[in-house]
Length: 192
Ligand code: FE
Image (cartoon, rainbow, N blue to C red; front, top):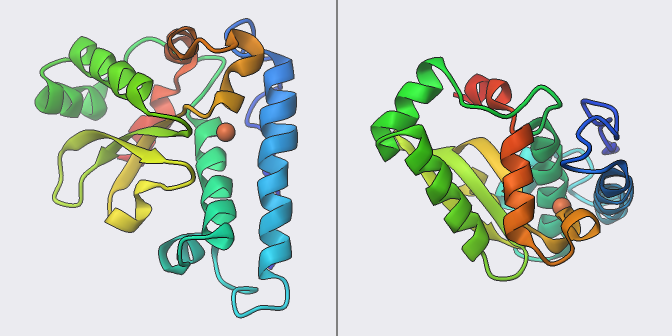
């Protein structure tokens, strides 16, 4: 099995000015591509060669194999969490579940922003459905993701510096403001 860099689900300049074409050239074209290349090198001619990506993530020990597999998964998921038609608020079942879990969309949004802002160093902020049901905001460091905890991922925000340094330099808060302008609620709803 050879892992492939997925195409972006939109043109690389489609999210400008919130996220620039240059950001996608590097984040997708260089960073994500490098994770895929490294993953292919690590699994070639090993017991992992035919193992599906999610199984590698669930079974690999901490280390380069897990890191590159999980970063491939995380980024593939993240591209879908953004859309040129994004922004605004979710509707339907997702809106109901957010109200149930957080009391309202605005409360959720500020809690998610605060949580994403508070990630120290590289990592990810997530909206998940917990194994027992109910929505929650969670974070993971580095390459980790919520799959191994049995949680269903609905939405993620990449808070590695490489996600925002070209457009926002060191300002993660400005990146998070941009994230809400292009967040793809249709995709998040479809994960429920
Ligand atoms: Fe990234």
